[in-house]
View (cartoon, one colour):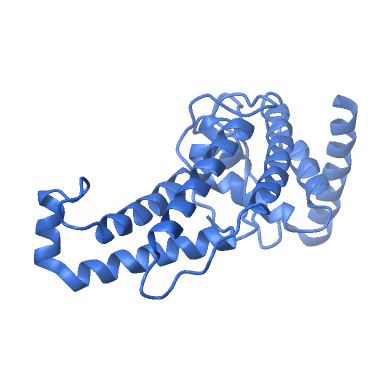
Length: 243
């Protein structure tokens, strides 16, 4: 395994030298920027079944195939930094033919132990997760919501799907990675669905407390419209596999 990564690193470095000589600058990703040395943020070693240690604050790279330098890939101790920017880097490569091999080669050429092996493990775990998620999604049949709002059955179905996929992510990627990569979007979507279900609950239902009644009296149609729009947006993302 080590010799394979070393050979890939050699090829990657040779290519970098050639580009540097010909163009006077190094471009690591399409539309990317020159890559400096490693530094701050935090994330522990990845296991083949996932990643369960603490994770440092995320970077802010944007776009489908972001520019990621050594600083955003590792922390001060040389561990792989797991954050949303790293997932965007992974997804950018994996969206292209042969992307998995290219991603492995890129990370191998940019990283040294312990981050190198952590990244290799996480790429493999993420590939397995993507395949398992695809197979799980194939078993799900969503119905498009009416513009006036999701019905109770649709809400229950989407919340159940969210839960099942959340368990899959934690099992295959580890709780820390699942939270860092998907947690915020999943929490926002779940909240939108639950708020819409609360909106549909009749007065006297357990979830309709005094705060909910007050909100309904004060905002009425505006509250309903806002909750419906959030729930519809969540449903669209779930059906498209974008959340």
